[in-house]
Length: 456
Image 1 (cartoon, rainbow, N blue to C red):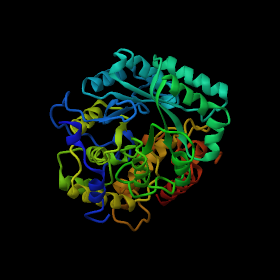
Image 2 (image 1 turned 30 degrees about the vertical axis):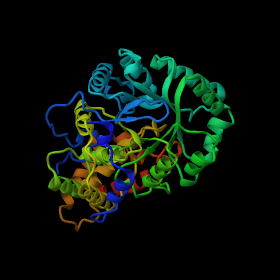
Image 3 (image 1 turned 90 degrees about the vertical axis):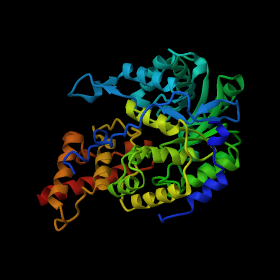
């Protein structure tokens, strides 16, 4: 199937999105361990991947991009998570499989996987010819933004990834003008990156957005930089819903990029995994419509049907997720009007649950007081989605839900790493790209846990 046949016109797609409907088990609240298994759907094609053409250099980029923020880990010790390490053999196998099945875009960062993602990907990718893959990494100088530290980070990325140029390089996770000026303008790093683009060591220069609408508008219309691409969060839930604690939805971001002819690279198409294991009401809607496809495939088809999307990043920790995503996008079958109505209904059902907009990015970690912040939020959200969130003892099935919440919490998050250990130091909140008020949420969860314990 050609690229043109796999595309759907933007005006038709936006029209489709406006139609249609308005929008357990004791261990069922675990985070990664409790994820919904992906249905096997037959052979994984090797020659049917959907590709999009980059307008700057003409790169033929796979619509499925390999996100390297959630690489598989192999514990060194069952007692101390800090002694774990990336499972390099598993990474090598996944990278080999991805390339063999048409995936050619790999996205990493000096901050991912406790600072070990670039080195791991350098080992895995250097085993393949350089022209077989496009490599993206970032100037992740959130912690040390001096010119010297930033230049050292740039050189270190080249060394770790075993390359002499970057295909796609990003100004990483900026959300305010003050932060952008401190990290990139005042220290001359923006000028440095522009010169590197001129020299060809950066083939495409872009940025990843986490912030407010006025800052997005500034970067796109007033910064004076001609961006080659922009990385945004987009999925069917936040298409018309403001992202996290921001004031802008994904549709606005996408429309601006399309108007300016700047390709969009999509992060969090699964909303930190939540759309791969949605709440029980959403699961029922999907199964009634089509019980033979994975929940994740709906999210990938939604985002992939937008024609100005260059690639969709997925952190595929497990091989079965990689296989399922390849099946979904090799080739892409665009979303129909009936399906878009279903997704709008699912999004509305998700708004009924007051979940915390954590995507599990780990930027808040490590906590200086040992909290497992993403793990706590994942358990809390999961129990909300699955209905294991009792509020009064008068509720039907109260005892079972209460027990599932409390025992599931102890099994997924060690007690010394739970919400009651939070000291409200605020370190985590400064680094959260979703602008979650983490200490406030921890206090809320702690109060709820204590309430359940006392009622027992």
